[in-house]
Image (cartoon, rainbow, N blue to C red; front, side):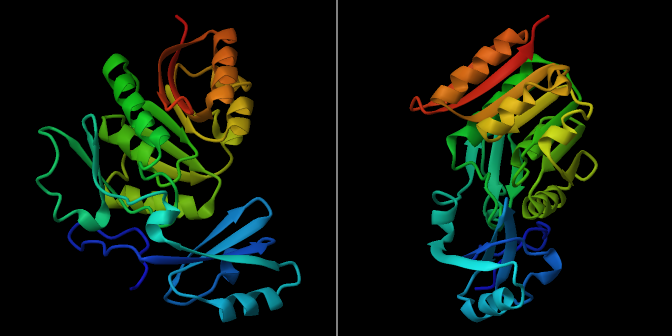
Length: 289
């Protein structure tokens, strides 16, 4: 089956994703211009000093040739997973409050689904995380809706956007200016395609960059479903502390206690928290008035 990268419109339904993923772990950095050009190549994921190449069929020859041609690269391993395993479970349409998240390839069969008045978000995640299978993503959707009901703001900053789902949710709820940020080039490409898929180009801008460098951008609400170490540095920055509303997630129990204490010390009140099995925590917080 041909792998699908996001970006097709509803009039041309997206095919289902490839069933199998072959992921090659390479030590070193691969320039986008050096990425393989073949129909089963899905994308390149850079993570610190490592690169991960995604294919829908085995590609040992192509990867070996790439490594041989660059002395800065070292082959590490190959992983074979199903698409569902990679995302932590099947990605099916689901409802979270007034938001209904629908896989792009189910768009046609989902036209009449959902509760009356629900806002539908089409999503083609490719191999990027953030489809709603993880409890923190769904809790962030709930927190965004609470913020929408309780507060008035127009600017949203989504740090670590991944597939762009939370940015799309913020825009769907009526926030007309959303800046979505991710350091990973493949995530940025995927998020931009999902913005086009939902025809929200006038509301959502996706940029590649470091959350710590872009937190100064103007916004009333900061959304960050990110690693603890990045969040801890974020909440110590002056630009973060100048914001008014916060949806913070991706935190495990001990880290959540630490972040909650830091917020209180900096005059930010947690309005509501969500927790999943006492492990994963999400906060909706507001600057003290």
